[in-house]
Length: 223
Image (cartoon, rainbow, N blue to C red; front, side, top):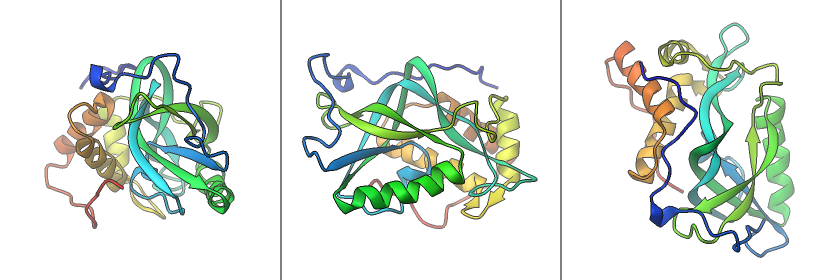
């Protein structure tokens, strides 16, 4: 088992954050726009209308499978494990930022309030997002984060325990294993500069527990 660590591998120099003089903007200069950062199921299934999307990362946070899910990927009797963001000075979490504009803003926020807050237990938080292609032009984005104060929070556990729980759980959105593997697929598509040791350790533990291959119903592609 890999030892639990809050730190994530940092991007290479070519993807370093912008200097302090570069101020992030909410809508990339559009006052009617909003960026929403997804780092879990939103990277492959946003399910709301958007005008633009960019792959990139946020600094100061690490992704952890520490939130319980009793609806999308689990049940009341068998909560699944989904990701949240943990504050970590040396952390780096990769994901996708979606730009919503005009009427899309209210529609997206209304939808995500149900999906992430009501059903998921997440709160909103402002983060600075660095696009993979233009890290010197950071954006301010809205992220949904599950804190230890919410009733569904499960907290840390050994990777083998998390893997066992993931293998046993299913919810209205599908099997918990699909959630894990689609997120792992996304990280591979981001390239070698995108690292997540916590995610990799859980995938390895699943491979040990379930050596047979598992293929999602649909292949993942970056938006």
